[in-house]
Length: 165
Image (tube, rainbow, N blue to C red):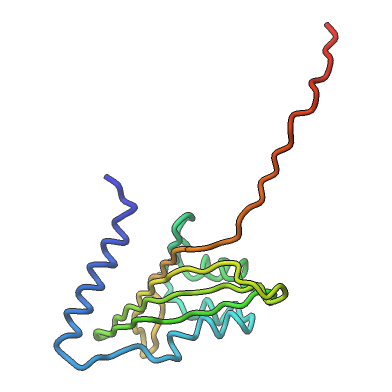
């Protein structure tokens, strides 16, 4: 069985439940202070504030990397990602709240500030959970649409050395 589609299928099911659940009441969305909190903390260089946005049992799921599980691992993840030379921008396109659970979808962009160029962009999906009155990211998935090209250098094989037998 291909288990790589299970998280996506689960999130799609959650999305459908949230959409259907939202039909019974007025539209409720996440506050902008929640949807922009990671961007703000990242751009301030505040690693701890980035990690604090996540629940203790949270996961960050990327397309080509192992999942980052738990707050300690998430803090290490941001310690490796946050740098003053880059900026992080998000644009939330959709957020739906149903009780203490919310889903948010949008796009992100990473910019090399010194060079003034985008170095990565893509799409993200966050599942939020309200704990003790605060929204905490429970699952974050992102899909890279564009990232830096890796330069590959092909050097022709030098003349083979003479072998003396």
